[in-house]
Image 1: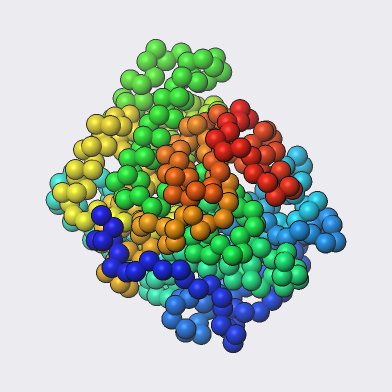
Image 2 (image 1 turned 90 degrees about the vertical axis):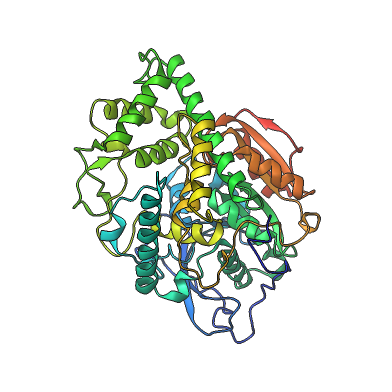
Length: 500
């Protein structure tokens, strides 16, 4: 199965930088620009090679922010890696801004570091043609003509992004390369003694995938690693899509149950929520629903003037990810859309050559990490199957976008650079780490975490009996347990279930 994906020998990759490497220099911490309103916050820019395997002396940069520990002799640094659609420095700022943030309790023993990886950092942004990106082309083509148009559209977008961004950055946006970048930051965190320079990490969502990319290559420097909301990168493309689609469909049904039970839900009085949603989806499929509150000249807040089915489904999935605390907004948004105002479900409208939402970086990384369909018949067969198995959500997911949009993506090599494959080293050689999954996650199915636990014998998997994407951060049992891992260097009982 994997032989058509990779014609390579799986091997342990060396992370140690060369002695004369520009990236082999200590991090230079200084006051952030603009200055942080919070104490003990410092920033740095760190150069990393575009291509770790080429030996070329050409570099891009990562933006790094840390909050210094309250103790003079911290146990180490906890890394918060970012993914293509999340800034690690922004996550750290979020934790700083929450007076009750449980994450900040770890400052009693650790520094905490947020990282903006290549393509997200303002030092190395992805650049594309906004006008072309705003043109709509369906990701689920109904016939060969639409399929060919979709291929041409995304190939042209990719070619323009490559030209505007620069081929070195464009060709090296995969998660495996990002994992090497983060190892280089760890290696060059010279303020700490070597014994305290281990890789401690809380990887959330795509940050969890970055964490897996790190630990599967190198185990010697692993400290306490927690991966929350992870997708299994070792299974084939169909399995990945089916798992996410089923998770989305099931979570949506749970949302309907919540609305039936919760009188404050804007859809509480609907007699048949499944029928209501299906009718709304059909309406958006037949003709985009207007979004009267959206403006196309509002800078970072610009959004499309109307909403089609694909955009509606992807935003529903995103809003489900918050769990019940954010579901009231989703219910109101769906009710408004049924009455002709889909503004809250509108997609971003791009206005310049850089992207404040990191949507572009997400697709670049996705096309280098996930294997697309081979041809129209494979794509069509997958679409038909998804519509049968997930009739409410119709198969629209983030992983399906990569499966569809990346078919004609220009590649430096014929294969997908970091496509799905078995672990690079035997799972038994990976040191203990903690996997976290929630009972109902509309983006990262629990199936992925269970599969990875089966492949990594020393992994510990725990569950939260709640709905939503990611569990760490909110006050509750799970966050307390994760913090205890860093305080005590011990893991909870494998298979434990936490209610909060």
